[in-house]
Image 1: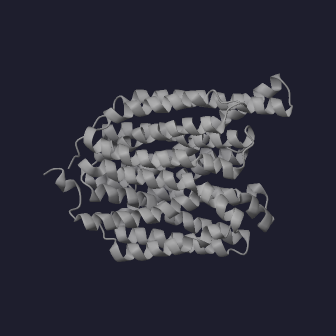
Image 2: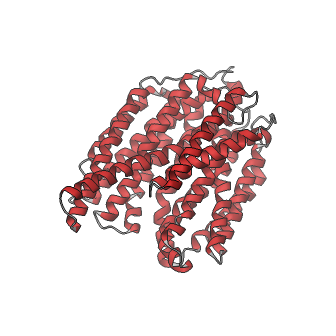
Image 3: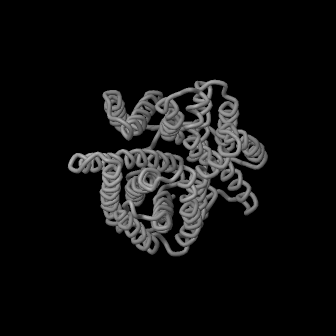
Length: 473
């Protein structure tokens, strides 16, 4: 009885329609997010813009999403699931049209901002809705479907973008998305229904300002720090950090916070969020490190690197579904131990990367990592969110998605910083020939993965405290 009351009563057909609408919208949003970077050289040529300018297409997207995510908990208490998701898909559709037809770079940048508004709304709504429409004993499979969308789309994004650019032009990356996005809007309008509770709490505008300043400053500062540490970067990090401290204090002192941080009073949720932070640091940075190694040391093209990511992406998507189903049957502990073994084994294998490494070796070890991560992250996220009462689902979903964004940025800054320092130290003690540079870069990659392995080991220790929590009322 207790379990049944924690989900929305509906037929299997109704639930399937909602899930299909959510997955279509989220899939194309995440897919488009990862396609744009492949087009940077073409965009630089067509708009006569330097790389630092074009890079803003990725930076502003991440900045908008990271700023919007914490506020979605409040928005989901003011607007219905239908209103939220339709707004998200319409934002994304309009942004895609603007990007595809942009006559100048500034218009393209505006289109990316509008697209990011859609993506930032879409992902927490999808997670929150899944938590509402599935009972606790089936939420593992539901979270597995989210993992499929979030990881399979970026895995095929660079490859699809490479094919489109080679045969058509970068604008077709947006043109081909437009009919799918339009279908998503119509499908959601026809079949999506509200499943969440509309409480319309008091809006604390100071909290919104502090949230946007804090998370926006942190995300921008971390993304900029991955490229170059400047006074502007430090200023962004300091202002963002101060605003975040004030934001946390504000949320703990008012009756209706926009992001309920008291969710961390639930032990299993808190442990799960620590694991999400650590594992996402490893996952995002590992992807970047491997792609840079293949591009620089192995001399592969961007398209070839994209192809090397296909099989690991498929493995991640498949294992997300499998691990979700297994969680529903066996719980969290049975899955995370073998998952961590695979994660640590693959990270250890990457500490041996050098100029003689083959692409087959990288793909094989990346597949192991892509099987291990979802064996841990899908059960952990589900167990953590299951520990929350229904009224806190929107806040839990917002926190999970925000932490994933921040963890990715922290991981990239940390491990690319290790890579850069070790590489520079190596060349300072040897020479500056091309061979020395490649050897130094390889040494930096190896050191970065040793540290990633240490983070993975720390996550394993934290994971030992995870257990299945009974859903509270």
